Length: 122
Image 1 (tube, rainbow, N blue to C red):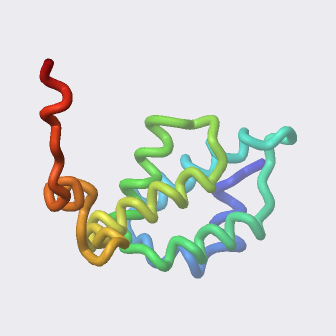
Image 2: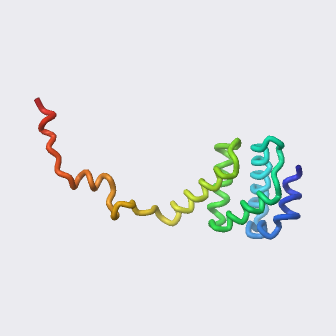
Image 3: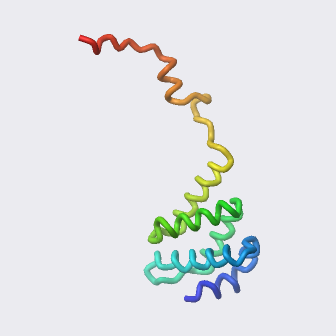
């Protein structure tokens, strides 16, 4: 399977977003690696299109860093691993979410509750 040919012929519209040759080569390397997570060693053009469309939700620098992270850490994982990396990186880039508990952390709750620890001393 020639991943580069599939990407350029069928996913060219999505690749336009990644203008540098380095970014495009990284994407080709990524898909060439991910295809081996399948038993057949091939990957459908529709799967590639779906993933490239999903990547458009994220900043280009986040996508590129996520691809590099996936390739350097877990080459044997499927593309869903990269999705998780992208979500986490984008979240960190925009700032962490506030804790769900009315803006208070667990440490704040512990400090606000009076504790009598004298029973520990004998």
